[in-house]
Length: 273
Image 1 (cartoon, helix red, strand yellow):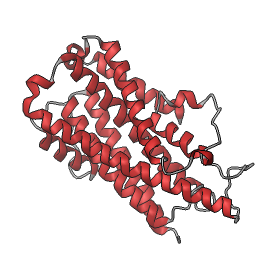
Image 2 (cartoon, rainbow, N blue to C red):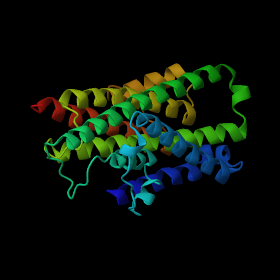
Image 3 (cartoon, rainbow, N blue to C red):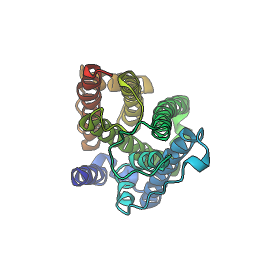
């Protein structure tokens, strides 16, 4: 799974540098703007997770993550690994297995706290995506000023890393949640909570890719990008592009939508609780 994701990311990055229409677009301080965009995406993910867990006293966040393999996840999906690190830090008791099946009060409190963290992070990610789309909509009225090489390239890389990270996080997290089943759930989320999470992620998916289509394609306005995103998310009007990068994003949105609708929502609705 990790190897497949790395290959996909390599293909996306290769298309940025090799596709002629984008070659001149990413030339000025390319490495610096890419690093700045990548770090900005990680900082935003960290801020969202930190705010999502802020309701919990620090003494209840005592478990530290020391798995070195998690470091590599930052280059695949900083959102997923930060979510895992923050969620695993909520520890009311020591446990020896991945199965949470105890009935004591500490276990119930831990599962409730994790459920609250997951819900908060899901809601904040939706809000942040909405704010980013609002910002780019306002900025689009004066793009001659906004499209300063350094600023626009940094923002473009930021959008690229954030949307890629969120899509991988959504696909991986929801898929693993469905495969694990109800008995191995580490939180107290019921099927209605999970349906709500999937629906919010579906709306966020539309907002995220609206940003992508506006930034990385020749759309005339934000409205056209939003309509393209809605058409692709509902798989009612999947648009084709001559740009390899944009086409890969289209496939990414379709895959994310299928994961949310066909896999997650269908499975959650069929659950008993």
